[in-house]
Image 1: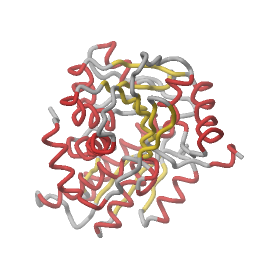
Image 2 (image 1 turned 180 degrees about the horizontal axis):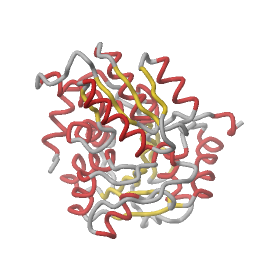
Image 3 (image 1 turned 180 degrees about the vertical axis):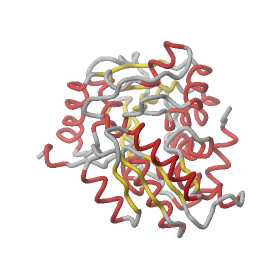
Length: 307
């Protein structure tokens, strides 16, 4: 099981290849971790850089480069990391992926293949291509190096808030981010809370069923939180840590995204806003004096509907 030692090793491996993103005080006992300002617009850059560098270090990164499947953000992270490390990248995304993400993938130099209507179909096609081409498959969330790289975000938070914090709210799709946060923060007794859309709740369903299960995927946040099945790593860590798992509906997500813009001038994607929606909808009610961090994890969105 991934632990803080793996996260610290990832931090050393990644070094200055990723941004150390800021923390913003949003109100009494409330902070935003502005990870949406990360290279390529999401936390996934941390995990992808670690995944590729680790593969190169182990001597298993082929000349064919990497292949990844994504609803958008993991592909952007893979494309960015591959470009910075001088590695060819091919990214499979569903036909429903937002145009803003597809255009940015191409701008980052990746070869883009659009197939299927959701992440699971793009994933199957990417695995098939990796086997045929010999390219190194970079999983979007269920990979130990990906999870450990994502966890470096938690180490940063500990350094940035030396007075401590009690809880961090994390939007969840396949679970690669929350798994890394659990690994990084568990020794500090910080409560990590999972927040998912009611229409894309793979980790919530896994915790209820006692193991990862397939779930239907739809809703405003499906492009970034639309994993049909939670990762085995995330499930194992979430169950072992007995995390709290919350659900928020599309109306709450849309409202939270709008509030982040109206109140703080922060532009995030719907999946990211799910974490804040736990507070604005009342799904999560902090105790008196509780210190809460909302993790804002992605900004790859079309901001035109916020004007």
